[in-house]
Length: 265
Image (cartoon, rainbow, N blue to C red; front, side):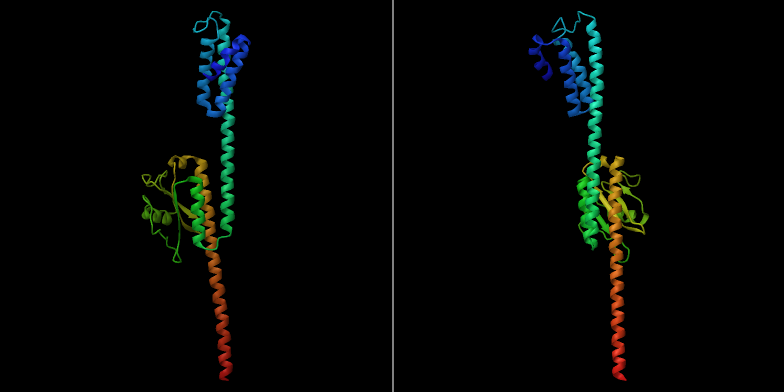
């Protein structure tokens, strides 16, 4: 409608071939803004508007000159092809932008986790990163000193501790968008580190269909691996610190025993 209203006053100054160019430009603009479907619809409507308002006899779909039929066909084909190509470029640009955002998110999470020294820090950073990528609610569950899954005290609505424990023990995902307990509203994945499973990541995304997109699933798996590796690093740091404290205690004990033995002699 906008192209038609703009072109009507120009009919006195331009040939019909130039008016056709305006309609093709409109198809390109629609493709850039709205995508393939609207661009195809715009191409069809542009042909109809050009025929009705500009081709003699005007205000009628009757065509007095058969040559205009070829014009309509070429106009429609060029409009559809141009719209499809433009929409394809727009889609590829969106994909590239989305990949860039995911890579940036992973970089920021890796950087932050590298400075974490406590399980609680890893948990908070992991949950924040998952929420930034998927929205909704997220829970990162770690294991205690006895290698038991620590369940949250304030379980959100729909969160099932039994499913989380099953995922931890069986090392398999479950819940939403999986083949196991798919009726759940939460998605549960094990946090697999190089040595062992270090916890469970539970997610209730804003859009459940995101978990059906391979790139989104891969992003979630990568986030989970980064969190699991951070948990394992923190675990071994804690083990090393305890070993160091024990060694220092042994040294102090030996010094004290030697001093007591010297005093007795």
